[in-house]
Amino acid sequence: MDTEQAVASHYTQGDFEARLLAMLAATGKDAAHLTADDLTPIEEFHIGGREATVALAGQMQLRPGMHLLDIGSGIGGPARYFARAQGCTVTGIDLTDEFVAIASSLSTRVGLADRVTFRQGSALAMPFGPGSFDGAYMLHVGMNIPDKSGLFAEVHRVLKPGALFAVYDILRLAGGDLVFPLPWSSGPETSFVAPATTYRDGLAAAGFTILAEHARGQFAIEFFRAMRARAAEAGSSRPNLQSVMGADAALKSANLFAALERGLVAPVEMIARAD
Image (cartoon, rainbow, N blue to C red; front, side):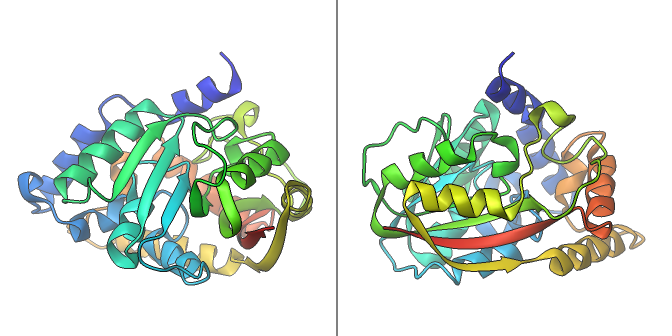
């Protein structure tokens, strides 16, 4: 099994959509008549969820009608946000067939199928022509891709000159062993967490100029603490992503939180312009 197949296998569950819809129904949602707001607590896999997506969007100089590329689009939460709240058209690409199918299905359920589309494929060889997009973003994706330089070169290829590329990834801050499993990988063979210098150098080599960089380590720690507090609420009926992410979801989150507290990793935002 090659690296991309192993990554897709890590995320594939087989019954994810059924369990997600069952969880929504159990918390009082009508699965046959879902709204975009119903999905907000459970459709974004990165640290900070919707709050982090909104923060990134605020730095992207967005305009209604822009065509955005979502790299590693998951089940489509950020794409639906950019379409609904920012008035953009979004094309998502993801390695995992199951995620692509769910992203399309959920978008149809909430009436956004005409604004977002999803394709299965590799971020290292995207099926799009040069200059196809007005902007691009990826949220917690680079940790699964060893060839950062190849990734950034491919993103640059499909962007129009002057377009912005927004990155929100978990980056390596210090040496020390990571404890697996983690949300993006069950073992080191599919985990490629890199330091900020790797991103800066790769972006520059691909033809990008970095306009902004923000470390979000404290934000991440506070997010996990708040998530734990909500989970501890007796009788809480709030939908939550962890409840449908598999039997080891709590362990993955605990290991990531420990790495954040130890200062080994942290999420970092980078905004770059395609020159």
